Amino acid sequence: MIGPYLYLLIPLALVAAFMSDDFALTLIYLLVGAFSLGSWWSNRSLKQIEASREVDSHAFLGETVKIKLKVRNNGLFPAPWVGLHDSLPLALGGIQPFQRVAGFGVREDAHFEYGIEARKRGYYSIGPLTISTGDLFGLAGRVQKEVPQQFITVYPKIVPLSNVKIPSRSPQGTMRHHQPLFEDPTRVFGKRGYVAGDSLRRVDWKSTAITGQLQVKLFEPSISLETMIYLNLNAEDYNFHGRIDSTELGIVIAASLASWVIEKRQSAGIKINGRDPLASDGLPQSLPPRKGKGHLMRILESLARVEMTHETPLATLIQRERYLLPWGTTLLVITGQVQDELLNELYLARRAGQNALLILAGKVSYVKEIQTKAAFFGVPAIAISKESDLDVWRGQA
Image (tube, rainbow, N blue to C red):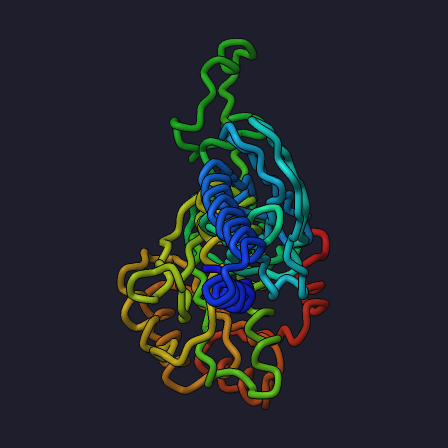
């Protein structure tokens, strides 16, 4: 496509036709030849230019993510100029797109590096990278192609906790407990002399042989925490004026509690009443209680992508799934408002041998009334209106 040069070519052709002007004909030949050569060169150059992007697929909040571009001219013809334009996510703070213009000789390559700051949790696209080029004189116009976009997941913020008071009914586990009701046979901390009534299973026969007197093992008391976190992201259950801040605080609370439980070598799971843009049905995956850092990363990844929704009420969600949870599981319910249906489900969970703790996140109306009503159902409720309120769980254990 000749574009603006078409308007020059038409009058020259008319002049050459009616006046048999050799100069006009020569000029036409030069323009057509330059255009044809430039168009061929541009398309040839574009085909031989290859580019790749290298970027980490995951990042923690506050990290600087390095993005590396490699551009190479694989052909036998130089590219006078190559334009690079890489789109970046606006949600990370209005970042300007990456733009460069460079020339490439035969078999020449170039490396570019820039960074973006992971300022907000979420799932973001990097790119597409647009590569454009053209002839040296600009007669044929520019041609372009794209390198597909890549995606990066920014994990939510984790507040380090050390003294979370979560009840448990499970007698055996890995967490040391101050109430010596249940003892863990894998945690021996001493020995003492045999007393009538001691079980023979406690006898340390090796020490008995050395001392000549019956010795029994002493075990540390412990409890087991199996925790299921329910995060309510139903928009109607949060104050309209602080809805975004409140739900983001709820996500921080959920991530911090999951991290604390798993760091204690206990099992944590999560169910989110929200929307996952990557899920085929739009619903976040339900992650049952499991141990280990790998499971924690799966929880954080789900929390990173999740969005608010207007779907199933939280009480209905708990009603569907609490029958699948084992006896002694603790239900940590993070929400903005509490309806009677939710309290009734938590009451039924307690009667079935489970525990429940209500966590009111963000701007919540009538906190005292909610706490009073929850106490009537036997469910403790605490209010976390801002991130600094998590200091109640930061004390020394």
